[in-house]
Image (tube, rainbow, N blue to C red; front, side, top):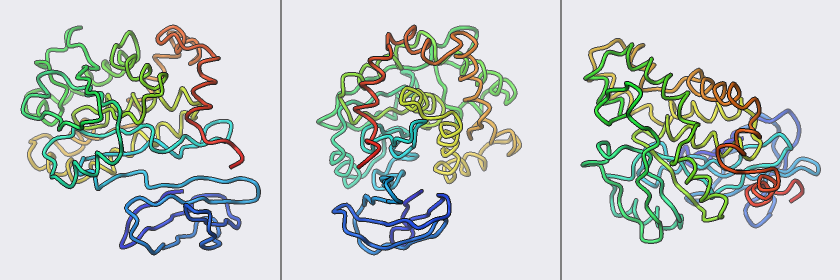
Length: 315
């Protein structure tokens, strides 16, 4: 189920066929719809919340993308259903590109989200000239998710839009696979992200230079902690291709390499994140063992996280 704006709010059902009751935020019945039906809603709410009910099961639906932030690829991780049938809560975890070059109205909208922490996963070099705007309520953490050793001579930057003009595409592809298999291990940036979530200091926003690679693993990590299945996580990961379409098109026009090569670097492909997940399982066999070894999270703490960040089954 997705809710997006197209000359009004459009509810697109991708659920199994059947009859669903659609309620507004005040639990007033709006309409009955069938699976795979589109429902155009009236109203000018910038970000409405709906309840979709079938029998005893209720789902919460809010727009995933937040275009009013003025930030590229700004998305909410809420709404995904985990292996137990529970949904991730909205308005807790945000992912995006950098918070720079924003207008006054964008800053005002961001302030309304009451973000508690911003984790900037870029390197120092990537931040120069592209610093995040300041949100008074938020604690800002400039903490790179990548260390530039292990032979990766990219001059302290993981901004592929810039690197494509400096480094061979094949080398960049190989570097991406190398980075993806190292991101999950002994990484202070993701340990800080998990710590913030454990301490319930949310909403939290995390971003890198494009909001897709380092940010993509951060999103995967949080969803894994809440028992969301791998395929759902991979599908969220590749949404960056959709939400970065305009930005990537500009880059394609500026780079001499073939569009196929550029897309392989500037876009996201499931194989990259699959390599990360496979690296975790090769080292630790299970995600449970990974969470405990890398973050000190046992099953009791995971149970607490699920109670805090998942909607109850019967709402």
